[in-house]
Image (cartoon, rainbow, N blue to C red; front, side, top):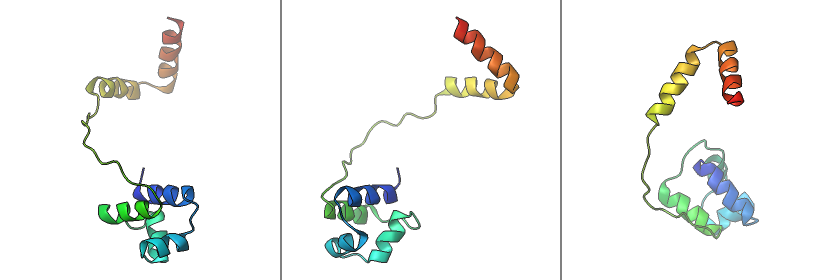
Length: 97
């Protein structure tokens, strides 16, 4: 989810127009529109200010990052080497099991 999506969702859930959010936050309405379209990305502080002006906040916490699954990547690599017909036949065999 992008910062623009978060801003737009918070604003619409709060029932605010871009102009109303502009008034509440002290930010330019045109700038809010650019952030919502992801033309530019606001700083984390600005993002939180905008969300708080809508009555929301971000829950910032650290969570473990799990990188790509090596086994899954290997299976996908093998599947990409097959023709579409071979992939279909393998799927049908697996469905019969």
